[in-house]
Length: 159
Image 1 (cartoon, one colour):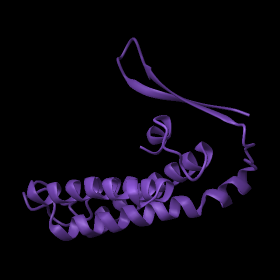
Image 2 (tube, rainbow, N blue to C red):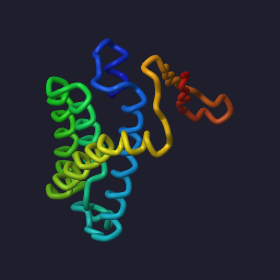
Image 3 (tube, rainbow, N blue to C red):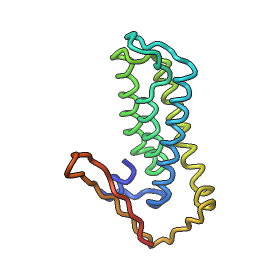
Image 4 (cartoon, rainbow, N blue to C red):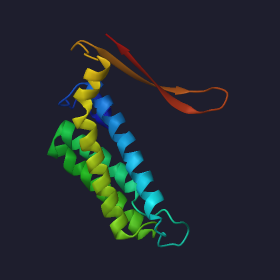
């Protein structure tokens, strides 16, 4: 979403490298938090299918993305992103995949993950010596494996 808005002319606060680092770090922290909590708490889902209800991973991902959008593009776009994330959380409860507190916890995990992602950008850049010049170019390209039909992306930096 972050890079998509830039592609249609909506300017972000940070450049592509910072957005990519923040997004990758936030996804990693979200994954660790959600999976750790699911393994520790083992709450049964309302529909009785499994014991991994708490917290809602779908809701965490939706609120992670919403907070990343809000940070990068402000509350104008953030409200739309948070509205969509709220629909995701409510739909998880409505379809009896989660209890309401699972979705609330997922939202909090997602927001916290996005904050972690942005607060670690500069330490990560310093750690790896990634001081990208302003004129650096980033290319994100969709790919398809002709043999298996798998879809992927190719990311390249030119600096």
